[in-house]
Amino acid sequence: MLIAVLSLKGSPGTTTFSVALAARWPSPARPLIVEVDPSGGDIATRFSLESSPGLLSLTAAARRNNDPAAVWQHAQALPGGLPVVAAPPDADRARAALSALTADQAAGVSILRAAANAADTVVVADCGRIDAGSPALPIVRCADAMVLLTRAHADDLAHLARRLPAIGRWNAHPVMLLVGEGYSSAEVAHELGVPPLGRVPDDPHGAGVLCGRPSSPRWGRGGPAHSALGHVAHRVAKVLVARQPPPPTLPHQWPEERQTTPALRAIPGVPANPVSINGLRLAPPIQVPDFGSNTSRGGQAS
Ligand SMILES: Nc1ncnc2c1ncn2[C@@H]1O[C@H](COP(=O)(O)OP(=O)(O)O)[C@@H](O)[C@H]1O
Ligand SMILES: [Mg+2]
Picture (cartoon, rainbow, N blue to C red):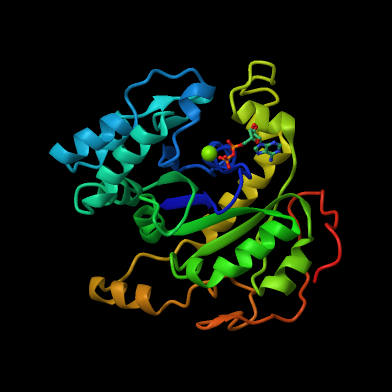
């Protein structure tokens, strides 16, 4: 299974949540984080990893050999053994490597796709802040699910509303998560016509562990399994597993189904046709449970 985690604006915690999602993915799946953020990676610096192997060495290897097992060979281990293919911190190098990896679809994206297709495997791709020109977009397009993190203040949501119709065409299985305080899930669902799956709580201690802060509790005791952030990540992972599309019975039916699946309509419980092909239409107010406990209002929805 391939999960693309991304944001549109600011720094809502995409990398932190990607690590949380992989760390808390339900067994028996083997999780692998691949940092495919063209603005440069953070995980290697945060966890004092070696500069290689990582995304650079994977990109070079993918040119020579399209064996999906190679993806695992370019991973390093985070505390607790969680494997990560880390991007270089330098934005120019990260973008160049990612562009090379995804420009040649046959050698690049398909190696991640094939690695994610292996039984009991989940590849969590941290795509960073994304736009239509991002070299990570081919990964979003071929992912089994797209997890969009957004803060829930008026400016974040206004930005999201403008881009929602385009974003909805990137992936047939989108999930929206609000981060921190701001408008409630029900208000966002009402205003955007798309209900968030839940809310990632503001959890500095939980985030500190997932960012490798030396002052934070260690990975095991007090780690992701015990934090509010880790708890939400586990809930989200379980929903994504439950929604995983079944493998096609007839291979020739698959591309057709992919093309006709209406974007941003694939969430169970979503009112029919929340987003028309011409843009947004308000959905009726619905109650959406928040995973996190901090659901304060950011003001009157307008
Ligand atoms: N849920 C959270 N609660 C509190 N702090 C967080 C949370 N998620 C991330 N952070 C902090 O926010 C900063 C940016 O997080 P990061 O995951 O790198 O964001 P992004 O990848 O979107 O740029 C880091 O210092 C991280 O520790
Ligand atoms: Mg990041």
